[in-house]
Amino acid sequence: MTKKKEQSTMRIGLLGLGTVGTGVVKLLRENSDIINMKTGLNLEIAKVLVRDAKRPRPGVPEDLPITDDVREILADPSIKIVVEVMGGVEPARAYMIDALKAGKTVVTANKDVVSQYGKDLYAAGDVGDAELYFEASVGGGIPVIRPLKESMSANRMQKVMGIVNGTTNYILTQMSQFGRPYEEALREAQALGFAEADPTNDVQGYDAGRKLAILASIAFMSRVTPDQVFTEGITRVTPKDIEYGRRFGWTIKLLAIGKEVDGQIEARVHPAFVPSSHPLASVHGSLNAIFTEGDPVGETMFLGRGAGAGPTASAVVGDLISAALSKRTPGRRAGDACTCLFEKKVVDMGQVSAKYYLRLTSEDKPGVLAHITMAFGAEGVSIAQMVQGTGGDVATDDGKGELVLVTHTVKEAQMQRVVKRLNGIPEVLSVDNVIRVEA
Ligand code: NAP
Ligand code: HSE
Image (cartoon, rainbow, N blue to C red; front, side, top):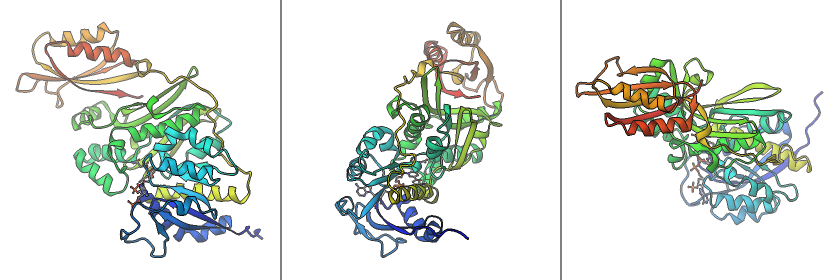
């Protein structure tokens, strides 16, 4: 016979009723029975904060108590847990700090605030039984924060790497697999609810940079902030680069890479070619995937929907359940402790090693190739592969030639110097793109 679960009601304040907020409301209503069966919890939404409480909200239950006055949540002692899904830095940061200082536990999906102000949030919550949960801030519906903080806490982590932005993965998949234009794919990602309010954060890599800062901080036990993450977005990736990559047997992805090498941290986000046989190459659409490597666990991979209402609500409500169970049994504080106990150096991007793909346009005349290869040689950069022209044609009709060179592994600083040298060669008309290649 199963033991009857202790029954308790927990009143929740919800900040935000957009894509994620409505997903949370729907999930709590539709699955309240299984949540109760598993935990004995009745999670009751006491109040929902929006910007404009008078705006009609089709599809939102009519009995949902909506307000545009945050004090109705923050000053209500019966509300024990605040779920922040408003997005942006302010006023979300201030509301979370106020809630934590008032002893309320905060559950948030906000990587902008957690990555930049994690330290302040932990400090504010260091009173009573206030806790901080942020599973949905990285990887949408994929459980990765708690596994890192709890299940794998006995490990020394060496690597966290993956695809952590659904919008850009969706765009690159559409461009690569269906030849869809960039703008069209971006509009679709926005319509599907994957993109941030300002999609610049997605396509310029800032969203992935913030997520990597969170992952690296937890994995390497040292606070990494977004300004320490080298960040390059996908806006310079062209169909031509994708096509060349295909000829080399590669697929392009926006990768977030965090490593600890000799006590120092490498943290970077940029487009990268990966072999098409690599497990990350088959992570398509809005899917996210995060690889971790730790001692003694070895390699672990987390895969799932990285954005969208349902997956994100799943992570938020998962946190909410943990938070409510913890409130019901004070002192439990599961997985809540800040573990940034070291101050490790984040290495300069110039010292990072990779292979490089470089595409350039030059005048098509004798001797040009020698000048180009000399620029590589002068910086000690060895060329592994070279291709002229997209379709195998050596030159275009207008007397210009296109050349793609792939290097062996070199330091980023060496490659930057090669680009400088190439730009100084009169016959080189433009260095069109440089993309890192991750084996
Ligand atoms: P959203 O659709 O833009 O919704 C934001 C909600 O917050 C709206 O209901 C808005 O009110 C409310 N809001 C914003 N600023 C406010 C303010 N100053 N005062 C009161 N209410 C305010 O955003 P979202 O896509 O749900 O994202 C929310 C958070 O989840 C963000 O931190 C995002 O990064 C994160 N996240 C999103 C996803 C995703 O797939 N969308 C996935 C993972 C994490 P109105 O309705 O009145 O405008
Ligand atoms: N804009 C984000 C993405 C939402 O596309 O991955 C999830 O954080």
